[in-house]
Image 1 (cartoon, rainbow, N blue to C red):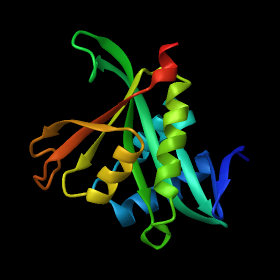
Image 2: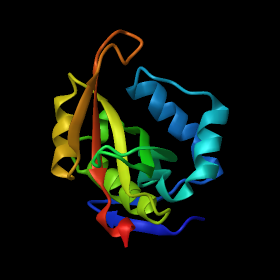
Image 3: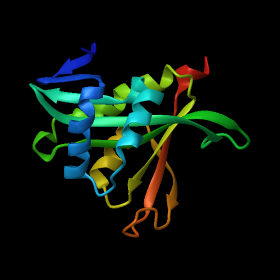
Length: 169
């Protein structure tokens, strides 16, 4: 049993365990057009368990988030190669939306990424996903660039990033 990171509004947030992978994959299939292999989920859980989280309402998996770490050019400094967190996927079942679950998942994943000494975190989001863009902006992410035809269906994405101030210390 994983330790609870946060409890609020009838929802429990904790690190994902191996037994959570099937429910996480089911949420992904129900809510997002992008899908991943079993191995991809397992590898992200092994790489950054501090930011692979699930949200539970009772015994029901209501949402998840998964991230990884990378090295790359800074989104904020002119010349800089930095360690970054990459928010790969976050999803909440439609019947559990508008309860703040996505916000808590992202907030807790940012905290988990900080523990790995990442100085930035970034994500891609569909340009048409206004609700998600607002959520990320409210959490401090800023749009850094538009990625043309990023998704398989041809839709553009915004790349959004945030500086993780605490990680610099």
